[in-house]
Length: 266
Image (tube, rainbow, N blue to C red):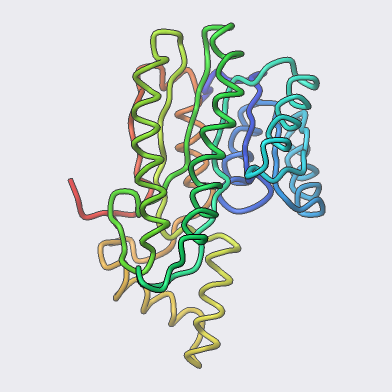
């Protein structure tokens, strides 16, 4: 299917690996030019080289999105290279440290909200004027199942994603008349380097195989994932690419769950 976004320019934050890379790859396959940003130069350059293999022009920018100066530099370099940004994928985020409410210090809340919410707000504020000028834009915010179905040992992460969901819905109502559509995707248990590391660490701690850890996690922690496997970054990327496209021209303010059924709510 031709998603009719060939030649569009997309900015993907946290685009060097995991879900961000999966989304960038899907957009590259559709003919988009790309700006990807992350904090680590080596991983970023490796990802950029792989994405160029699809024929896309790719700009990689090292940036810490909790710093306003880095956000300003990212936007300036992107606009200098490509002129405008048509598609914004706010993917960069952090899970933080798991723990009970009493165990989670306020500084941990602040640092997590700085990246998961406030960086999204600031970057979006800097990108929207160009979208308004051309009367076309797509903003896709990467949330989580936790925004809808919170877990007690991830209370600050769940709260930050719930806030992101609310922000996305509110934003969608303000700019739709200017051709700017805002949607959210909410993945759950996707096979990424972060999840792999978590599973391997748990396997080492428990003295069992990684495969057994995944099986136990699905049975005990995510029993509603009837597919009984993790999702892939390609599955997330396919949904994001659709939402970024002309084919999704009547989709606005929606939250697409890519969770294998994990969220029990209707």
